[in-house]
Image (tube, rainbow, N blue to C red):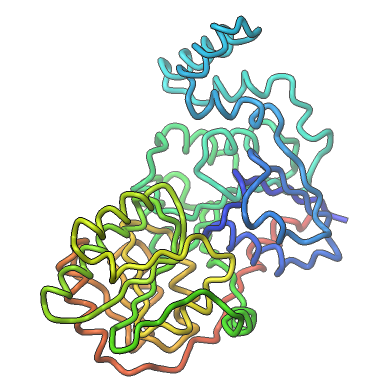
Length: 386
């Protein structure tokens, strides 16, 4: 039986994590021994992991999470409490910074780790690019073959090009979730082109439709254009643009209500923006939802105002329903929506462009949903062949 290891940061309620669940459920797991190692073993989706996987925590990373996220602050904290190891750990971090080599600190933190005490046929970092997990899979874990999984537009990531080159060079395969994302990656790292493969995120239209019938807290406003957007409340998801677009629509005499499904660090700012714009009665917040599909199903229009994506899984899910779709021109948007007759892509990443796209889309008829599910699993399973 072949052994596979996947690594992830955590299992938050988000697109990458949802795609991972779809990936696991599509695996022929009766013939595989699947292990998952987390940097931080928590998140809203963690309880949805299949029973047949073997769960691990990467203890040296988890135990140093506070240092990894805030090295100077944590070092001062540990020195004031006379904690052993604070100085050498900080020195390793400084050397890593000065030399521009992220592997120095990764190597130091993992120096006494036993790499889960086993060897794998395939090790995959499903959360790449991630400097610590990339190093863990590429240089630390014992595996016959290795792969990296990229869900983002690398031109928008803040990881150094050198770190990506160093860790990706050891990979046998680099999976990228859209053709557009793959093209951008290949242009930036031409020496890695022969390793890249497109692997679109796997979703189940049947499951999505079934879950859409479940009860929800959705509060439809009759007589208004009910716009739904789903996504973690982080800056790159563009919620501030969406709220400003709603204010512009009101100024145009169009009554629209924005239903925001998701939670995150920009929620306070978004709520304040809605109040300051005088449209707090037209913006509703539902928080993080394990099941966002009842909201999508009842929308008059679905909106994805992201600043950047790799392959937007919520767009793939919104296509299962009939409502018109508006999206900004992020990586993969045109690729995903080219066959959708009632989709409109905003001409720019501005509230004005989004509002103009909504004006066009709101008069488009509903259309039949997309029940297709492209499964590229064979390109993955090839790595397990002897």
